[in-house]
Image (cartoon, rainbow, N blue to C red):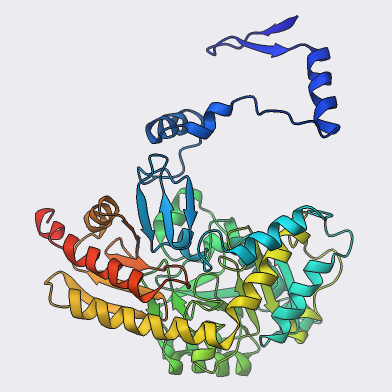
Length: 448
């Protein structure tokens, strides 16, 4: 027998009887091979997937009309078998490409041992990952989260708590923050308050108060505000990703460091996109010789699994006590074991040297091939985070490249092509990417 369930404006759905469901679960728990209810999903065509998505998903994403079903190395494929060279890395996430055998081994082995225990208990992969992060950075302690925006939320709380503890007898201790033009720190309410683009913030205001946006790179403006003594922390990306691939100057970061020290404010580097080998340095700030009090990480750390991390100095960590922050899922054994593998591979000096070499080669290739085009204003970046600034919208070029088998992103105000390929990409693949970009450039003349 099947029970009939009726819902207004929905089709009739027949649910299995209680006995049938008990039988199903019993067989599943006994390890008997149970086929998925809808095996057809494995053979869905692209148009079927897109049509289904439109019916069941909340419309938060203006998706590119492309379904990706599998990948290997720096190549991705749609259900119809079309091949694409991936210069997006899932927005700077898949640094080891798709299906890296060491990463796959780390995930599958750990999945068979222990996946999740919460942070009520200790787990070995979490402590191993924290130890490696501390050993390879300025930091003394680590807090794990599930994403970059969560990492920045934690950094906001840590900065506020640090200032409260540092001013025990003052009611009016520093609680405000500085962020910069073109910044992006996430979409949760605190991180959103630190994100400069108004179209991200306006639909959700009022967001967290107390944030002042200054011009990225303006030394005097930042110094004047920090020295007023109301700033808990300064949040800055050494290289802005979403904002348009803008790099800070050494003088700017040095000034922020010295002024924060003078005023007692904390310096927070958001390396969610630019950190962990993307620049050819393990940490982007190493290129400047300037070190923060707090650093936030996320995107590439676990090679495609969700993780974030907040790295802090001992003096910041000393202000944080049991119960001040936490997360059920953060830093689970599965994701941390994957991250250990990613960190171990990327932190190898020869790996980082290859990123620097390929990044310089790619930039020179792009300037040589594209530099003469009237729409190309600048090719900039460090390592394998590269931006091509145009004097028109980059969207037509992105679409044309996709049709030609190359996946790229936009940044800035939509006029910057963002290139963040897997760090394992070969020079031959970089040459192919540059050639496709070159051949697709004429589309900018047709659309403007």
